[in-house]
Length: 376
Ligand code: ZN
Ligand code: ZN
Image (tube, rainbow, N blue to C red; front, side):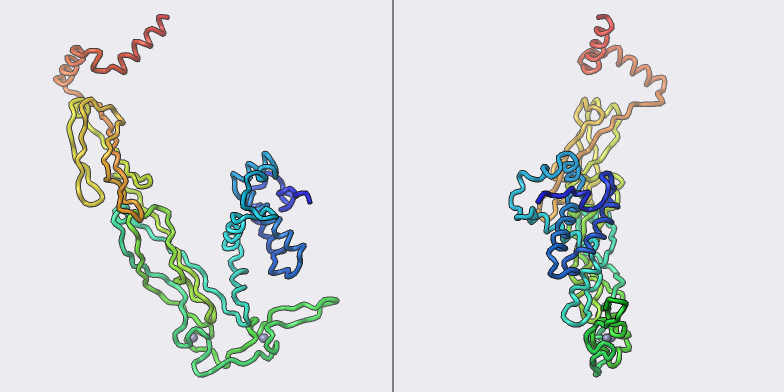
């Protein structure tokens, strides 16, 4: 069977933006998801087709290749792919998509098995640290407002000492049927919300939810060398599940504040330091503070040019999960003297008179070249 055009599969025009692609994919994926169409091979095929199309088009690089070469772009070198062109790469990105847009839907699946025990939501916590903290690592206490499992009823939602009985509205099926014209519509039982069972008496502390709102203090180890934008996952530290369902995860998004002196690139640090023209010409040295509360000596070689960098080995950031450090690069910005006094001016004029070609070989060479260009 010839492969259909990816845009045609998703039913969108070729120039569609990301949002339009995602929304088209989402709509179709919901419609054809295997869980909604059990045993329907046609739906399963369609679902794979739209997933593959979206998987390609959501990636700007793959999309560009597809736009240029069509399916031929992916026919070579697809080693390890299954008979339908779905390799491991595909399945892993599929689960990303699910977490992304099927959060609720997939969450509801864990409720299989008769009750409606729902997994708790994942939580996000934004943590801002300084570059010094990223350098040395630290343990941070964070206060997370979250839903925790109710201790009174042990998460069950039932008042201690009471139990559950079969829902009389749906006779324990969790679903009720209603005739509408030719069709029989089956829907979730509104009385027991699909659980098939009713609490004899709800727990008074949590109102039968099995969880309550609480502030929790967690201590988080921020490792030394952590980079801006790192996500730390604390498994099962998110919201408690509904009625005894598994808890969600807590994600800590770490951002590192910009530093006054240092600019960071991976494990290396960069600093710009202005130096006087005379220091640049004569040489010298100065100290810079380092992130470990110490100082590092920077040597300025005689004849240093503006923008020249001095490398201080091992004075950068610690490398994550290693004992090594990056380097510190100090860029020397040479400052030309301003507001000269009469005497300084005379001295510089004398200096100019005494100057030779060797004092400024680059500019001298350059101006000779310019001159020969004009003369020629
Ligand atoms: Zn309770
Ligand atoms: Zn019911």
